[in-house]
Amino acid sequence: MTTAVTKGVKISVEVRFHAEYSEKAPQNIFTYRITIENTNPYTIQLLHRHWYIFDSTAPPREVEGKGVVGKQPILYPDEHYQYVSWCNLHTDIGRMYGTYLMQRIDNGQQFSVRIPAFEMMVPYKLS
Image (cartoon, rainbow, N blue to C red; front, side, top):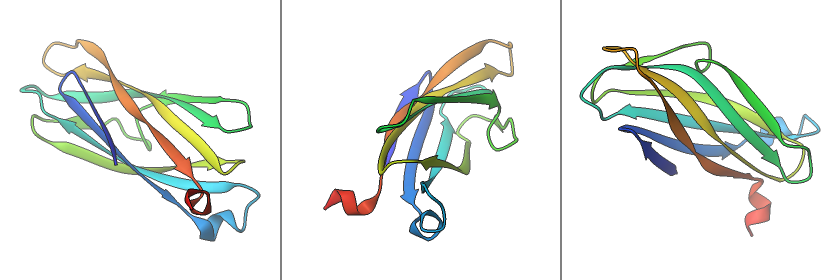
């Protein structure tokens, strides 16, 4: 698991390779589980995401948009939100990182939160 804390928001990432889907497609399929924890004394909302995706020999990609998995979750103090999404790679090794745009509910102030870099690697490459 990879973790980063920015301005009182803790982001943790867990990655999983899916051989069962990768065998059927000409690419490697990974899922990642993100846990967002609000350790601040105020309520926040996730508004936007921006991802940078690196596939070892393919051109880099950027993905951005509103919220995550179709939602813009609100997190009260000491609350967490978790979701699962996926990424496809054309090679065996890749990397992702990014940012979330958050907003304080009490005063409307927006701030950026770092999503820590994490590796995606087909398991046989680890041996």
